[in-house]
Amino acid sequence: MISKLPNVTTSIFSVMSKMAADHQALNLSQGFPNFESDPLLIELVNKAMKDGFNQYAPMPGDIDLRAAICEKVKLLHSCVYNIDKEITITAGATQAIFTVLAALVKKDDEVLIFTPAYDCYEPIIELFGGKTRAVQLEAPFYKPNWEKVEDQINNNTKLIIINTPHNPSGVVFSKDDLLQLQKLTEKYDLFVLSDEVYEHIIFDQQIHYSVSKFKALSKRSFVVASFGKTFHNTGWKIGYCLAPEPLMSEFKKVHQYNVFSVNNPIQKALAIYLATPENYLNLSGFYQKKRDLFLELIKDSKFKYIPSEGTYFQMLNFSDIAELSDIDFTEKLTIEHKLATIPVSVFNKNRLDDKQIRVCFAKTNEVLISAAKIINAI
Image (tube, rainbow, N blue to C red):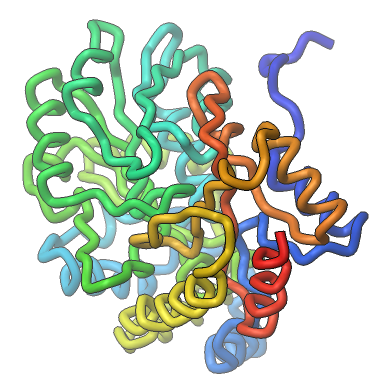
């Protein structure tokens, strides 16, 4: 069989999670919490099932959930999306990303991404005949250089993908970054896919600047968000996409055939749960305590780091510890020291190796303490 993705192999997340299981290692590789979602939210899902909401939801999503999302976005970003025409509930953020790219990318279209990047972007672009142009965020600060971005734009450029807060670096794009993006998209008539799944995990009083905050930018942008990242239930696979009506109408043309509708009782539960803003507004404080605990525990280790600005990931530089590649180092760390992490080069342009690994601190304090003991002993 001739594959449409001949160069794609099993994702690094699956590889490292399997390695962690095989070697009974602490798994700080894949980005999921090892603690439960709010019992109230689980009870709301249970109640929705018992109340009979077990058939197909409307194609764009439950109307009450779309209304709750509209209120949330208005509260946070002073932007109003039409409930019927500009909000769609999706089977997780990755499905939303897939659908945006399926709707927009045609043969030989080019898409700009910032690397290191979430590894789903490039294969999806390739699947629909597009080409990826990568702009490398330079270690150790991983801040975007907008002159380099503009240098990559040509007549075939269709779309720019941004991810803020950024996985894996933990960098948060500034207001100036979004203004620079807005300027470029207007100048060259480009679309934007803004991956904002970690929007509620921001540290040290920083602000998440959604593309929704910027009038000219929001008119040409798709915003993707995730309830799984926000409410500690990644296995539920539920998220949403926002876009102005002309863009969302194209999104729905694909969405109706690649998933049609999303888990109905979970949507009913989330509509009620979102009505209390504290359920998402308190998330930054919750995760900052975990980040601060973890960094305090490893402050005397041989690893170098810059504290994550957002997400539940922390980058660690091992250049003072070993001369191995990051892939070999993470394998050694898993097999010999029983700690699974992610080598960052797999997310970089041309597999650039900056001697960085990514750890996930969305874990119980007991797991973070155990992981820190391993790190300090290396």
